[in-house]
Amino acid sequence: MTSVKDDAEDIHHKIITEILNICTDGCTEQKIMEQMQLSHDQLRRIMAEIVDNELLHYIEARHIYLTTDQGYIFLKKKNRSLRNL
Image 1: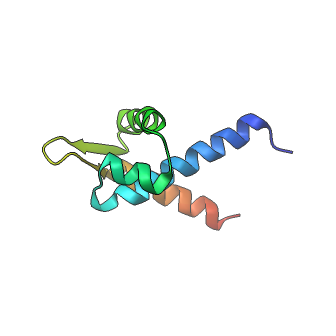
Image 2 (image 1 turned 45 degrees about the vertical axis):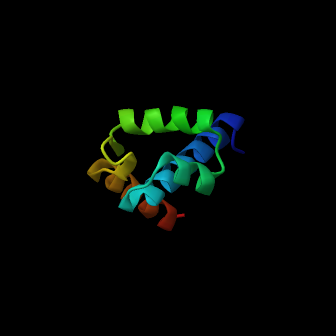
């Protein structure tokens, strides 16, 4: 039986994974909010975490987020773990 904490962490990782997938070619906050159906406050909190962990890079001149090499590694590990289920 999974705990509420485990479920919350799983949802959190799914959100991060989806954002990294959306940003592989670069995207704006608006596009992420629309595709993920997140509020601006929710998005700002999670984006700060993802950028701090160097999974995304913000390109200020273009106002876009782009998945980093570390982000691609995170996605690759997630895909591998899903295949092993």
